[in-house]
Image (cartoon, rainbow over all chains, first blue to last red; front, side, top):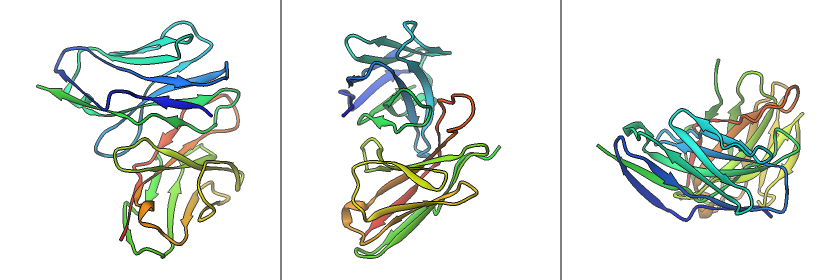
Length: 116
Length: 115
């Protein structure tokens, strides 16, 4: 079974600074997708960024980027120029490949606090 | 374009009772998945419905059941409620057919409290 581990229960960052959230996963599959979701107090999960395992290039979405190390099964999220609105719970998630609709396996989450 | 709508937003039930939670998927989506999120934890997959049939199931007892209607909306039913069923229940919709779509759209969830 696939597992996703987030070893940082809480992280904090100053506004405008950079922070990195860690995630490791375990799988025996070669085709899969990795995601970072943000869950603010409104409770709705919002997709931040996704990475296809077959792509060597790290995904980037504006201030958000990932460091995908396939051999190490590591998938960290870097937030640059942090903003107050980035404060939320962040979840790393895994989905097996082959389809566009399989289940997501989530990590335990990291609470990010942004200080003004 | 409406996103995923869940109802009710909050619910309080007594141990042993039964509950039904509802989800309307995003327009154009045909697959609905349900997740249970305990306080301070990551969501756990319950099951997924497509074409009115359960297609995948997580490690949840038979007390958890569901249904999908022809309009793609879905219900999650939980029987014989336990205190441990208290959680946020999230619905996520996606599109199974057509071009590959990596996107899941989540609703804001139903907060269930069992007393």
